[in-house]
Length: 140
Image (cartoon, rainbow, N blue to C red; front, side, top):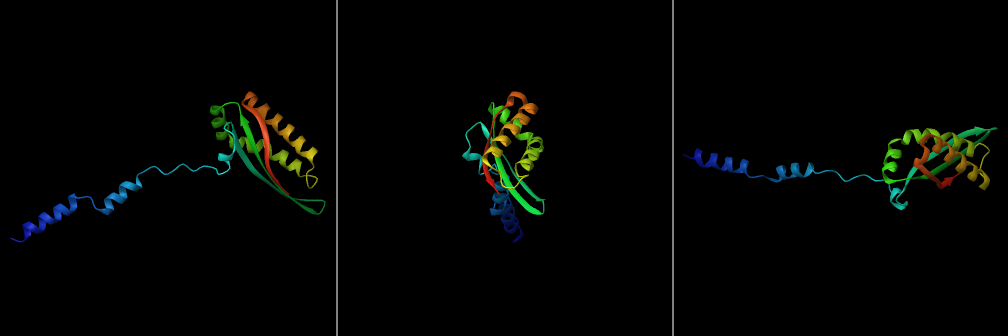
C-alpha cells in the first residue's frame, strides 16, 4: 500500500529537472572567446605578433631583448589568413630580431633598418597582403 505513493514520489522527483540537470545544461553553453588583451588596443586592420625574445652571449656579454610588433593587413579577411600563418611570420621575423639586438642595445637607426628589412621579408612572402609593420614595444 505504501509502495504506490513512494513510487509516485520517486517518479515525480526523477521527472522534474533538479539543480544537477540545470547545471549540466549550463555547462553546454559555448565558452566566451579568448582574446589577446593587446589586440583590442590596435586599429582594425592590425594584429599583434610576438613578443620575440632574444637572449645571447656576445663577446662575453649577455644581451637580452624583447620586441613586439603589429602587422597591418590589407583587409580583414587577409588579417585572418595572416593570423593562421603566425608560425610562418614568427619564422620570418625572428632572424631580424636577433640582428636588431646583435650589437647590444639598438639605436634608432637599427629600429628603422629592422622595420624596413622585416617589412620587405613579409611582403616577399605575402605579396600585397601586408601593408605595414609597426614596432609596438621594445625591452632591452
